[in-house]
Length: 562
Image (cartoon, rainbow, N blue to C red; front, side):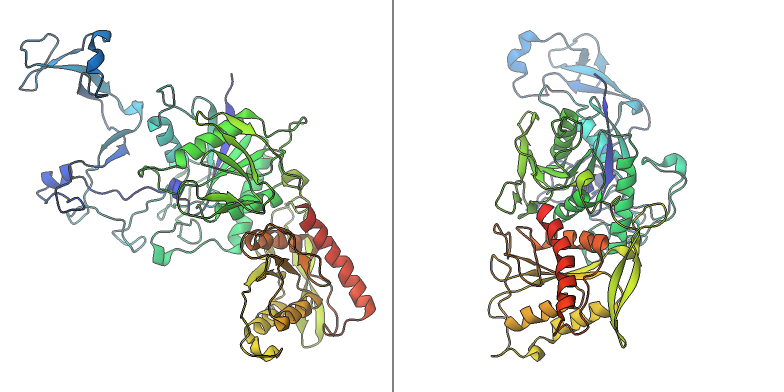
C-alpha cells in the first residue's frame, strides 16, 4: 500500500508545537560544581528530565536484562539468554564469572538511529544553569520554546510515541509529510541558510521578528496575535499549498483558543476539494498528559481513511477540527476549557461529524448541510478583484474602490475588513430614556468606521438568545449604521441554538457564535462590498430602502447557507 502525502501547515501560538523549558540536568549541575536542583518540597530531585537529543558519535551501552517491565522476570523461562554480563567493577564479558554478575543486553547506539531521550547538559554562558526561557526575547539570554515548523514534533512522535502493537513510526509508515511555515510559532531571529531548512521553501530565511514573521505566546507580556494583514498572508499560503495538487490533505496546527476561528475561515475561504484537519493541544509537546501527538495521528488516520470524500472524490466535510478522538465541523467547534475534552459543538444542531475509536479507526456519522471550501460562495476564487467601501466625508456619502486580490489572485493585506463584536447585556443603559448622548462610545465607533475607507461591519451579540439589543437607543444607532452602509449581524448570547428572526435592517446570524459570525461577515464584505447608504440614514427614501433591502438580502443568503 502506497503512502499518502500530507502537508503540515504551522500556524501561530501553537501549544502543540511548544515544549517545556530546557532545564539543565542535575547530572550537569553536579559535574560543574553547582548544587542540584530541588524538587517542589525542597528535597533533591530524584530524576532528571530526559530531553530528545541527537548522538554525535556511536556509543555502546549495556542494559540490564528484565528491566523494561517489573514482571519480565516473572516469565524468565520464555526469554533467550542475555548478550553477556557486567561484573561489580563494570567490566563486560560474554560469560558469567560470578553469581553477582548482572545479565545485560549490549546495544550500539548510532547517530543515524534518530533522537534519544537524554539528560540536558547545556549551561548558560556565565556558567549558571538554565531554568526557564528568558523573559526578554532575543536578548543574550533568550531562548524559544516553540518549534519553527512541524518537522521536529512529527519526528518525535514517530520516534517516541508507541502504537497499540508496541511499535513506533506511527506517521512515517503511512504518510509522507511536507512542512510549511504558513504563520509559524517559532522563528529564526538570525536567519537560516537554505541548506539547513526543514520546511518547504526556496532560498535563505532572512532574520525574523516575533509578532511579524512568527507568533509565540511566550514571553506572555510581549506576545501579540496575528494582525488582519497576517490573516491575508496565511490565507494565500494555505490556498497555494492546497491548490498545488500534491496532497491528499493538510494538517494545520494552532493555539487551542484560536484554532476554531482559523478552521472556519479556511472552510469559507480556501478553494479546495481536499481535507484540512486542524489540531491543537491543551498541553505542551512532551509535557505530562500531552494530547497533541494523538490529535495529529488521528488527523493522519482521518485523511488516510478517505471517508470524508463523496462519490466524486470531493471533500464533503469542509475543514474539521480533530480533538480527543472527536471530529468537529469547523463552523460549530469551540474551546470551552483548557483541559483534554475541553471542546464542544455549538449551535445545538450537530457539529460533531464523527469520531476515532481508541484504536484510531475513524467513523463519519454526519456531514454538513451548508456550503464550504470549493462550494463556498466566499472562497478566494469567487471573491472579486475589487469591491466598494462606503466613506462619509464632508461632502456626504461616497464609494471608495477597495482592491481585494492582486493580479495573481492573492488576497491583499488591506482587503481584510474591520469587523467589531458588540456584546450587550441587560441593565446596560446609563439613564432613563433614549438619549443617544448616553452612548458616545458606540457613536464614535460608527463614525470612525465610516471615515476609514475600509470595509467594515458589526456583529451584535445580544442579551437574549435572539440577538435583540436590550437598549432601544443602541438598536436605533445600529439601524442607522446599516443605512449608512455598515452591515450589522445579530447573534444570540454565548453559544446560541436558536435563529434570530429577520429584522428590517440587520442580518440574522442564525445559530453562529459571535466569533464565527464575525469571520463570515468579513468574507461577505470582501464578496459584496458595503451596503448602499442613504443620504439621510434617519430618513431613507423608498428607493434607497429598496436598494438597501436587495443588498442586505444577498448577505442574508450567504449567512443562511454557510
